[in-house]
Amino acid sequence: MSSLLQICQYVDATRGSTALRESLYVFPIVEGTHVISLAVSVGPVMWFALRLIGLILKDRPVSAVFEPIRPFMLVGFGIMFVTGGLLFWSLALRCYGSPFFWAKMVMLLLAGINIAFYHLTIDRRREEWDEAPVPPVQARIAGLASLILWVAIITVGRMMAYFL
Image 1 (cartoon, rainbow, N blue to C red):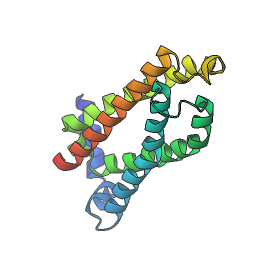
Image 2 (image 1 turned 180 degrees about the vertical axis):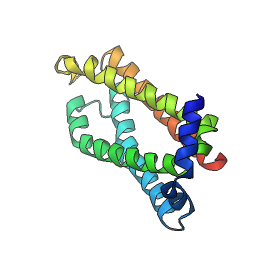
Image 3 (image 1 turned 90 degrees about the vertical axis):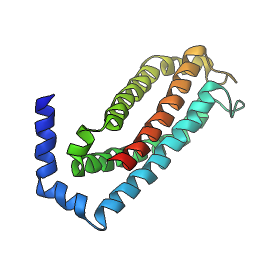
């Protein structure tokens, strides 16, 4: 981990990191954009997860719920990834020392694994259960895991903002 610490020390000492961190306007714009992109991406993710669990929109096929919100999720996640990287760049050393940062990174990894597992396995058989009011147990578990992980990621992300 010492090499990761050295990387964070290097990043934290760069002119770009310092400029972003100390900027009166750019840092708040980046942070605000991160939060807005979170709403644009995770809001639809939660909506879709609730459909997978079978709690909402039971009369609509899963594909009819997913397809219109997919572009919002992808664009939002793209923007969130870039702005999150910039926020890390501006506060790399503080992030390194934050248990909230590490918890967020672990949960983001788990959320990514959940997404990959869903799309590479369960979703490939969607035609079999697309119109079912309550999807199969594997889809419901993936939806529930998504909900839990994203609520936790957002909570820990907010904690980071208060304790960095």
